[in-house]
View 1 (tube, protein in one colour):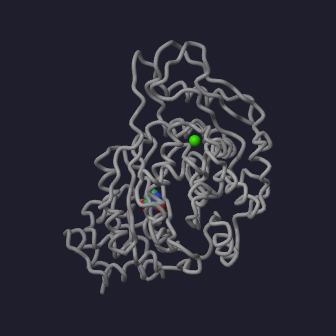
View 2 (cartoon, rainbow, N blue to C red; view 1 turned 45 degrees about the vertical axis):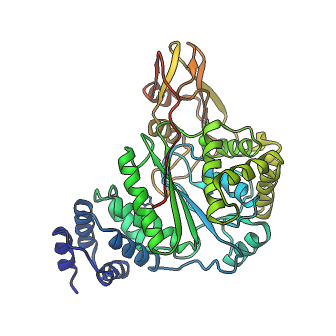
View 3 (tube, rainbow, N blue to C red; view 1 turned 180 degrees about the vertical axis):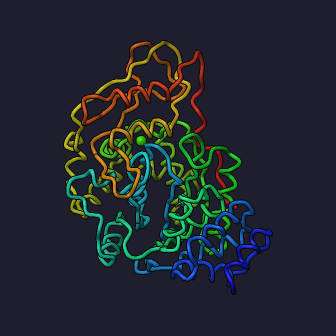
Length: 433
Ligand code: URA
Ligand code: CA
């Protein structure tokens, strides 16, 4: 088999076989296929696409390119949740303890984030002492004992995806639906999930800008999952404005605590109930989504979800006193409000731009080497559809530098006040096939 032939076959829209795709993935991972040939192949896929079968073969080949987590020692159906990424997306911090409090094992491996704010691990690091590097045996023990543990990636998971994603990043081939779908799904499969609930974001702050693109990505990931015998479904949710009110790592931990207390933002709470009930259904803990929502709500109301979060933090050696005293989380030196310049209704908060402003404060990272400042970020005081009056704070900047003129200048451009606007639809669709 020669890589040059496979590249030209894909250029001509031929369907590649499982064996051919495995040859490409193995060759690229081991180094016998060079970057320039893999770039050409990625570009051919970018323009010509892939069938569902090809995307499934690519997914499994990448999942098998390195270590695979064996979670069989954990009792019960392991359901993983994945979000395609957004701004101020605090759902994992809420869902892990919430779903675990319903008795479903949550063995969560999370990454560090690239982009506006950190990933789940970066957020948890805002809690003093929290340890996310656990030996696999300890991770499994904790999930069996407490039903929940959240750790960073251990071992050499999906090296093929790591290498290919980095190559795509510099060759203009990230925005390819089959490449995105197989990249995400390979990591979920290698992480040992039995069932997968996907949160596909759509809008300004997301990879997918239109409902059509998001649906195509969702259908493909669901079909890949099903082809690989994992129950998979996707919720398509809005990411035109940031999720919840908090953007920034420690600020989002506080928001997660409030949400687990039943005092969280409406949109974050709703999304957690929707995704959580899908997780409970996939884990066969409930027999309907309504029953799932009721169970989740009862765990918020009776305090068990919050206690589960405390138990998880304690078990991973973090300072769980922040649950009762969130003021003990790291705080930025300066709080500076952005004031509304006119009366009206907030009609736009451009999520990715708000996220970039958070990154300018140090809440996120552009390269994996950058360090994050866990204390900085922003708290929104109004969401799209809310009435605002001239002079009221639209958000508060939490900064460790006194002069935030650059951030202010940016933020002036990222919101719109009109005469009328509706709150956006949060959940667009659920894709199950
Ligand atoms: N997230 C991933 O993990 N991979 C992609 O290709 C895009 C988003
Ligand atoms: Ca948030």
